[in-house]
Image 1 (tube, rainbow, N blue to C red):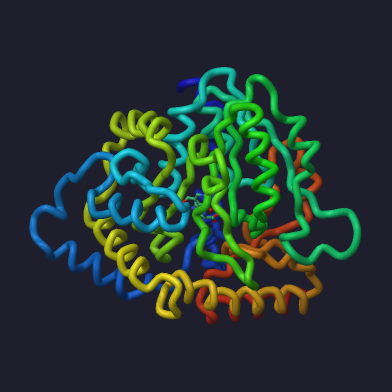
Image 2: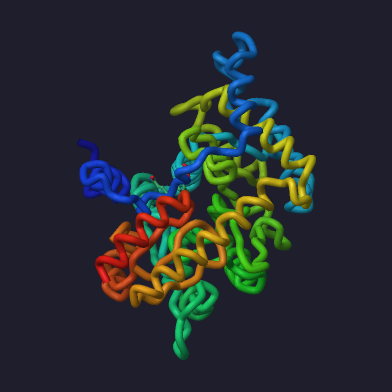
Length: 379
Ligand code: PMP
Ligand code: GLN
């Protein structure tokens, strides 16, 4: 086998999904909803499939035109600048492939990539496959008092600054974070942005949970801060956005001068992702564009729905003697035997976080009830 895959044959999701199936476990491990996507996107998918031959055939390599056009229109309003649908967006096979294209396109042998811990596990093998070296910097609970919210987990500006070197090519952040649920505040993003600008470093911002924030916490895109659009690749996922993880539609968004390199990787590996799924996601975003900011919006409704589940799971964990860290965003909570949080740390920092366990709450109430029953018996 090739050296680039040395040591990365094990995968937490492959292993735990199999274990959950083998033992018919109540699965709060892997992050996917056990409920259906909203009917407007399901109907759009069916309509696409029944709408003639073209939805069954190839489409534009870098993204189905209807999808890139509406993504550009939608996110221009959010980022506060004109996004070019043809230059600034690449549609990928889930956020996974957007990340893969980003690392392959931008990281060379010998480059360093700063990764904030805890991190979604694929960043490290992807950096390694590109020939780069991961340099880790942990979010840590602030020293005093009981730690109850993901907001209490912070980066030390000095420690972060100390990780930048002449070899640093990029930094990866994830907000809202998986598994902690931390949502970076504007000042924290500004501190990261200042370092990126000072050291001429690219920011890879994984924002797949961007619509899922709670208790009034606001998600801020680092690409919208001054001077950052030109050096940020923002990663998104229709799987998370519309609760349709099996459709595997994602995207990378950023300045055309960076995105063109991601396109080179994409056109020489995957070429494009499923046409009908892209069409359905396009219809979904058009609908969300039209109802944005109203109570009808799915991006408004989903976090309200999950907020309840999150409080329910937190209460359950407390009642069995665990200390949940209430997430400000995303669909995971740490506190307690699902996916061990150690998988989200580098080997050197893993021991400090061994005592935390991650739970996923994007589940039907019946699933949460079944988990509660098991936990209560166990305690
Ligand atoms: N980034 C993060 C932080 C995730 O949790 C996930 C979940 N799968 C992904 C990327 C990959 O997203 P997708 O399913 O769209 O490939
Ligand atoms: N992102 C999801 C999680 O964190 C699923 C990842 C996967 O299945 N590979 O659980």
